[in-house]
Length: 461
Image 1 (cartoon, rainbow, N blue to C red):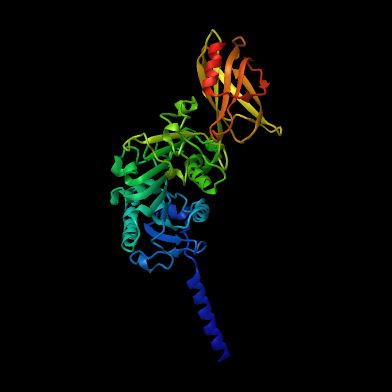
Image 2 (image 1 turned 180 degrees about the horizontal axis):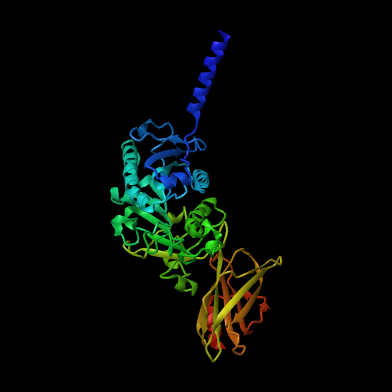
């Protein structure tokens, strides 16, 4: 009798344990990719009440959910093509960071069965099917009191186009879509209805990090961000001998840049501009036209920036440079120089800054060559991996980067250095000095006078 009782108790304990087991993202392998997978979609809900154990939403009975609160923002995260079948490496981080940033309903869209295949075209064909399934879930949420304004979809690669297809079904009334390096292959020549488009939601922000290979090159959103020009990302392998990382590093960088914005260690500031070349030449670093939000920031808080002067039908491209590792922030400055050489000089200026504690940082950006003409102002964009607050010394080196020509001098009438990340800081100046080619000149700057006063001084001299 005692044995029977223990046996019944054991069965009950095992059954209870199975009932408490948390639903997890589908974990497959290369064997599944080779054999192919039939499309299956599951939605895993996380909230601050169940941050570590997901609840699987029932496809035709979403209202039965224990944790879904339709009065809160509903955020969908949609992955892309999975040629190896493993769960995305960033999945755990994006879940934790989104929940810590805001009290939301976070829904991980798991279509790994359907995305795991060596046949990319099969995964592409499944995108519209996934979108139709997601619409069924959203429809039920709307009936239960949710608002389209509160629906936010974050799509990675193929997932970005899935989000776009869902948005089309609601005539662009979704609150927001973020596309993280939307897939290029099979979508590049598609019309707006065949891919993600800026009309698919009220606000569409897109990060292009691999636009010359796996990603999409042309603008797709309300605002399109192009880190480091949108192609080769610093810190990523440059040769095929690096293995799989060579193919996916640039493509995945969009995700890690987005994650960085959630960690809040620094804001990645971007600059609306027509081209990366114009940005590098310092032509697009004044964001006063976009007040009161100033320059847009990348990532989760990109929707805080609102365009005031640009027509709604016109997309905005924003460019910026990053470091090669987390948190990816660059601290940018504009070096504004007026020269008085009679002959035109063309070359580069490297900048180093030192603070009062003796810390020194050197410019990390590969700026474009500048053309220096007599009494003409030239702006040089320069950036540092580390932010120094109180600058005590500035070092400049002029170079033409030519080996056979004679050494040149660059005669500086005036120079100013202005922080773009912290425009409230003092602008630093220096007047009347000469840079000898390839010889570093170090000096102590002085605070710049007010602009009107500076102009009067130049007229007097």
